[in-house]
Every structure is written in structure tokens, then in C-alpha cells.
Length: 130
Image (cartoon, rainbow, N blue to C red; front, top):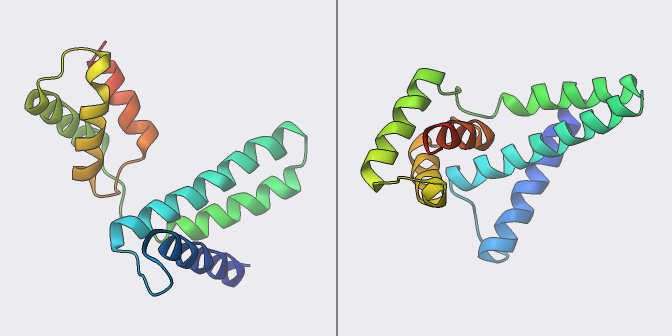
């Protein structure tokens, strides 16, 4: 099963490289991490659908695939580090309300270097810009 997951990931990365840079293009590490996260997100969406339909067998398979894919992500950022990064980004951009959320999100995403999930970043930024 792991071999199939890795093959599918390799294919998704190659497809993204062709889409972005043409037939001879390659993705840098940050772009490849985006693809890995997207593949994990697809599987998490499938898990919730399968569990909602009572198909725990299929959900368990998707969970196993997520576990394989997560091995290719850098170590996750701690919550304290994420909070500090968000607070620094808010101070640096001068953000004061929810309409400034985009500027802060972009800066935090760049600085987290793929070690924080976009949903977690969004949650922290929203809490501080309310």
C-alpha cells in the first residue's frame, strides 16, 4: 500500500511541475510540500465522507495513506511557535482587522516553511484580528 501512495505522490508532484514549469520543469521543496499537503487534504476529505456513509473500511485505508504521506512533511511547528510567528507578522504588517488577514496569512505561510497547516494558521490569525 505504501508503494502505491508514494507512486501517486510522485505522479502528483510531476503533474504539478509540468503544470507550473512545463515539461522539463521541477518543483522546489516548498512547492513540493504544497503538493504533499494537497494530497493529504484530499484523503482527509475522503475520510470524512466515508465515515459519514458508514464505510469505516474505506476510511481506515485513507487514514493509512495519510500516515504514509505525513512522513514526507517537515516536523510540525509547535502551537507556541505558531502564535509567536502570527503575532510577529501582525506587528510587522500593522494589521488591525480581519480585512488585513490576507497580508498576515501570506507572511506567516512563507515563514512557517510548510511546518504549519493553513487551517491552524488561519485560526490563529482570526483569533488575533477579531
